Length: 205
Image (cartoon, rainbow, N blue to C red; front, side):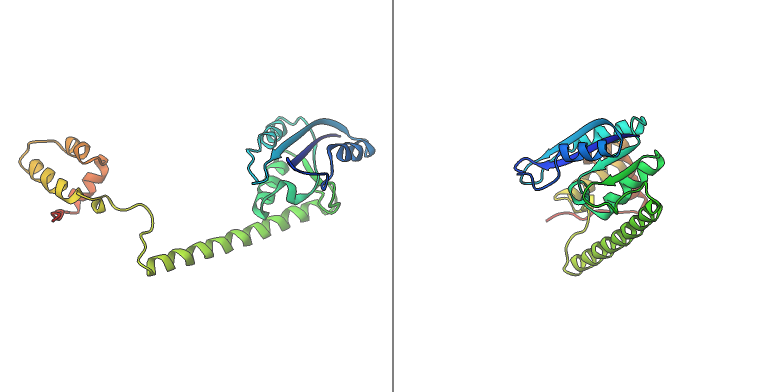
């Protein structure tokens, strides 16, 4: 079995988490062949582009190994949804995932399928919780009179004045609709919706 070892370490880490050598010794003790080692270094602020992780996933898509060995779950994944998403990708590729520090986290074991389904369930619950939280937050913001989303073009400062002038020129046949849309800085479809709704505009005073 070929194994890929991944590690995401703080640059200031003083050995609190398993080292590459620990993971290598474990893999070799299992009789596995080490395909490659991937490591992302993270700043104290937690900033990391995770280039090594993306490289690992790219190699996984090419079936270059059979198993991914990680030090521990929270060193690699930021949320349950992240776990579920990754397990889904690896399952399609028939690649296992195992944690060095948490022996129970092993998708190649008998309970591996149950682990995957459990992660999906928790991810669905978390997504639903976040959706309810967002919906509640938006409702509260609307209640407080906050503008949600992008403002309407008709709310732009000076738009109604400009639209009124353009509308008069359109009615007089001085410009085309496309020229009018360009002059107002909006799309043709937006202008058409305004005209179809008989929007007259309101002069700014």
